[in-house]
Structure formats: C-alpha cells, structure tokens
Image (cartoon, rainbow, N blue to C red; front, top):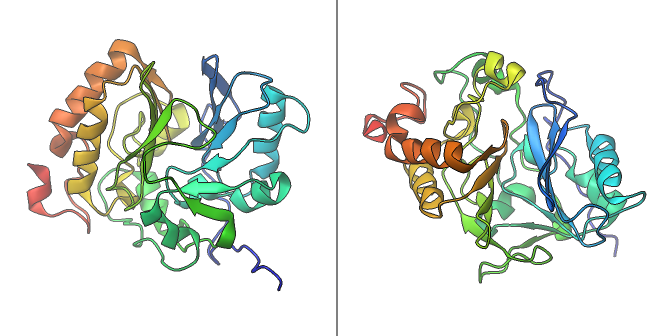
Length: 287
C-alpha cells in the first residue's frame, strides 16, 4: 500500500519579510549553532563535523536548500541529522520540513498535543491582524495557518521528558503560543532552545524584525491565543535559570542579560507581553 504523501496546507507560501541577520549562523556553544532563515531561527545541536547531530525546527517555506547548505557547511558534505525536533508547528517553524524529510529520510518529533496540526487534522486559530503591535501583526492574516500533514513521518516525543538523539536535553512543555509548544533544555550547562515561548525581538514590529533590535518579549502576539498558559510557560522557563537562550525570533541571549530580562518578563508578563487589545485578549490576562 502506498504511503500517503505529505502535504503542506493549501495556504503555504513564502512571506516577503526578511531580517538583517538572515543567512547568518552563530556558534553559541561548540555544539550549539543557531542559523537565521529570513525571520526565524533554526538550531543545529552537535559538535562541528560530528556525525551525530540534530536539527531543531525547519524554517520558512521555500528554504530547504538553504537549510541543507547551512547544515553541510557545519557538518560536512552530505551530512544528515539523526532527527528533526519541532518546538511547534507554525508555518515559520515547519516551512521546509517536507523537503528536508524527503532529502534526509529522518524522523520528526513533536509534543503529542501538537500532532493534530502536523497530521492535517486541525488548523491553528486564525492569526489576529487587529492585535496591538505593528506591521507584521497587520500582515499576519496572510500567514499560513492550515495544518501540514507529515503522516507517519512525525512521532510523539517520549513521555519521560528525554529527547532521543539529543543527549543531555529534556523537553519542557511550554504551551500558550500553541497547545503543544515545547522548549528544549540542557540542565548541565543551562542551554535553552526556547522556540516561541518567549523571543528576543518584538516580532510584531517590522522595524525590530528588520534590524533585529534586541528586546525580550513574549510569544509573537498575532499567533498566541492563550495568554494565561503563555505566562505560566515563561515562569516555568525562568525557574530553570537558563544560562543562554536561542529563541525562535531574535538574537540569542546569554548570561546576566538573559537572567535579568527573563525574570522581568516572568514578573511583568501582563504589561510587557500581553497586548492591550486583540481578539485573544481578555481583561483578566493583563494582571
């Protein structure tokens, strides 16, 4: 029996925005490499030229060739990750996943609650272009939010918190931005791959995204339907006291800059992160 082909949502298309750091990679630790694909970061975990490494998140639509090139530049020609791990299934984090799965023939892992959005069963809530915060929020009604269908290629993360092929890391369920959002944390050195649980740029603001002006912020506003859970997730991550964070959008943050900013965000999330208005914002979310 022929396996069902994988499909993107019918609304998948490239988005014109691009940030100043697009196409740049940063080695944050010897085995932690962040690469910016237009407006979103992917993360390669593993020492340079190692043969056991993994990819976290899969970039924007139409960027598979660029992601493969960045991977081969770091790990050598024809190198292939052991697996792809997702923080969540929004289009800018799974935009090139099908081409990568076909090219590398590797499994994809995600949190169980995210699987409906990755197997064609459920669309995300519509983005909210009315939300306070700027030009990208206003453009968000054009962003894809239909589910992709990875079929048998995606599987749930192990329920015991471990991350296969990603030694030393555990997954942390950080819902709010999406129901099955996870972040990946390594206890021994405090390295955090946060996804969009919080970001280091005001993702709603075109100016901030274009210039990558650093500012700790909650999850992207136009795509976050559950602010109460989002706040709890930030508190959960702050309690881990990470030493560095690679976020889905913006530049990595380390050391004291991270700890101070993340504490402020956890304490004052209602003021900093929750928009003043928008269809997913009730009054009780601000306090």
